[in-house]
Image 1 (tube, rainbow, N blue to C red):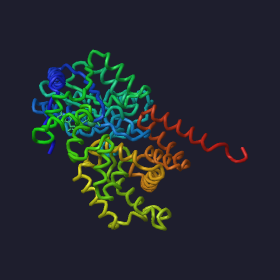
Image 2 (tube, rainbow, N blue to C red):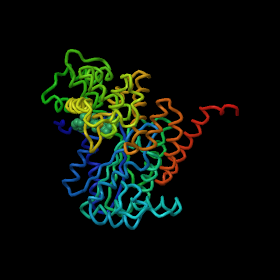
Image 3 (cartoon, protein in one colour):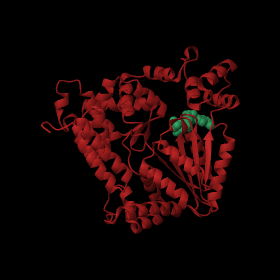
Image 4 (tube, rainbow, N blue to C red):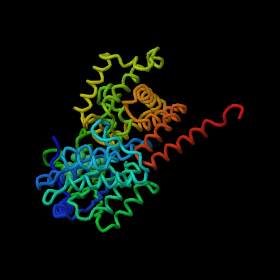
Length: 446
Ligand SMILES: Nc1ncnc2c1ncn2[C@@H]1O[C@H](COP(=O)(O)OP(=O)(O)OP(=O)(O)O)[C@@H](O)[C@H]1O
Ligand SMILES: [Mg+2]
């Protein structure tokens, strides 16, 4: 059961005003920043519910933490897939602007993108996305596009966002983007983008603050389902500093033994779980915050098989025998992890219920353990292209200290990025290639 929504009335009013303006053909973008766990997602899901009751269509897409991997246009590809459900207008635009089809899973339905020069195709892609959004919003029934966790957005997605802000004029569209303020260190690539966009007249920039003492009391009541004693409330306020996620974890933990730091609270929760659940959590944590279920399964097989004498030599597919007993263990562990609110299913992926928990799990792995998990990902991805991208393979191979595989995969990832019209990503992968070549040192005899 989710906790009833509390506080945030000023933010809700501002966001609803933006939705109402979009309903009248005055589009805008709202940037919602705030620390990890402060309540951004909860605020936008609450707003999405309110907007939907007013007739808006809501499409939510999230950026994903893939380390330095990045998948070009990820949130927009996800949004585009969702928007196809909005009927004929989108299909028509897909036909008119073939560059858009690059963002959709390959199918015979749409013409293969014509080989035109990349800059033109990129413009067509951006323009196509803007047109799709425009076609999905109508007078009195605007489109609310939620882009979650922009601090993890890839370079191409940041460009699309800037393009949209500049381009939207009279469309019935409101874009709401969330990002973690505490992640935006001085050289974070989203930082200049936020600074630039915040100056634009079509952008409302909101910073979500931690709960005040009064708000925290209401939140605590909502979480506990009853009045919380003032003493305890004071401790929770002190330790959480008003952060919703921290406060919730403290409120849900055992009264008598509230450990001091949040890391300890989260670790205590993990300690109480079945070891197989912790294993699954570790595998998901090393992949970022989420992992597609088929990839997790393949990695699980390789990772659980790694201690047996034959494991590393098992070779492609060998560990994947259908009905392997470890499948049943994995299924049970995943079910338990979901029941324990560690993981949540999201479409065909499994995600940590909260990114902070993923960070604690990843940080608690010993370096050797982390390398072993990366190696399992490398093997799974190398054996079956369908499980992930070349960029992911490059990332895991590099973290597993397998430089030759990382090099070949980075070259492939650069090709993939070029095909997707994502020049910054292409460049980044090529830079990785150079670094790997340099790391390998001069060829013998050179
Ligand atoms: N206003 C609120 N009313 C009720 N519950 C809330 C509220 N704000 C936050 N919460 C709860 O607190 C927890 C953390 O909030 P949330 O996940 O929205 O944080 P976040 O800012 O999106 O964090 P992250 O940056 O890690 O994504 C969630 O369980 C959420 O349901
Ligand atoms: Mg969130």
